[in-house]
Length: 557
Image 1: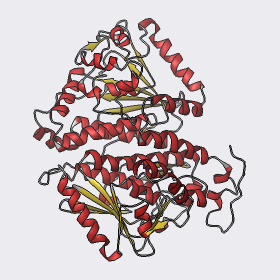
Image 2: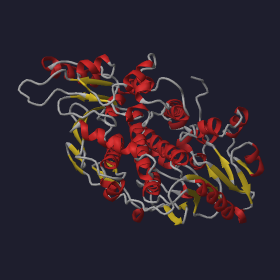
Image 3: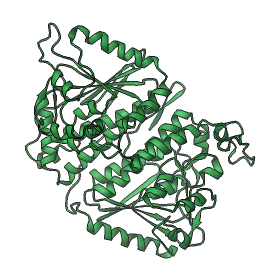
Image 4: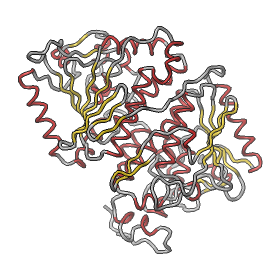
């Protein structure tokens, strides 16, 4: 999961159940039990112990893998109980010593990934027919409570010891950065004054008061916790539309080759131009789609839409965590538009099938991961590309798009075109809940309806520009210089300013719980992570556990 490259630890997000150190997964008919059992000496890096079921990135990588496998390999599971395998403790949250010794960039990426995984739990409950419940069998603090908050139903032991808490402000001078503050008031609708008190209380709240304040859904005697949670899970599973008699597909090991200047999967490749700070990502189209669902299911993880989602997902995570200096991602596609459109049509026609639904939801999550990535995104639309339907979403997600008008001199390839499919009109919403087209045309919502009349049409550069689907359309004479200048200009700007600018411009329109988490809570947390009150020599995060008191700069900023 992690290996050293010189002085740097390279994180690998690929894993599988036999390699888990920290989780136990058991399937019992329609209900799965996922128990947290963190190995104290199993940290991703040396220098800290994962006591009290505290977690680091390695623990969360395994959790994410389990979430994926439950959805794809176990269609029979309609409910998942999340609990602890340790006596008298649920989860103490993110490991404090790990946070204290980590770089700012690592902390930011860690929190972003954990947020995305919690969002995936909520999506499973809301969209996938796989409801998550938390059985809180011991103290549940910080990120541990944030994990429970991502579940639809929380059952807590009423034993005089078990409590829920968000103690980051009084203990560490940071925030509950994995959605805790947002879910407290937006999801659980805890009254603001109560939330304020709760978030400044180190010891947390237990028993009936936790129910009265809506911090948990119910409390039961410890002796009845397992039985009660099982009953609730069975009830949720009974309501699920996931097929009890279906066979899942195996998420086989993802094949990836990494060299000094290239990362390659089956359908996704990425050139690494370290001198310019550019990652050049190309997604390739396949041949014809399968004839029917049975054939697609037999292809399993090799079925093109699923394979592309897995490869792009892994690449995004790898580049984010291990290639921080590649600040500009250039997005390209290659292949036949007809084939991409045929796959989109296939997924839509069979959208009620559990596997096709899961694939579309996975594509949605992967595109959202791209949306919230702190890298500049430029799409280059050239002859031979296939920015069609689901792959057109890549260009619509980009901060800018450049489309070559006409052909290249001496090149026999036909001019580049774009093609809309029905997938562009709501199948893959952004974190703000809108399609990328709706987000693009906030000032002209009628344009989205007009574009529905152009589904299936090949739009050349002039038509794409007229439709508002691309930013610039230079011809062959100007293409190389215009693209080169755009890339060089981007590289000359402050990465910090670009990150803030891009995040602010990408999500116009309504706010959702997701956008509040990423654009408000995370932004404040990332700022606080750099402030001396948290990370200075006498900051709370640095002196925690030493017996010394933190020293604060009392000036408000």
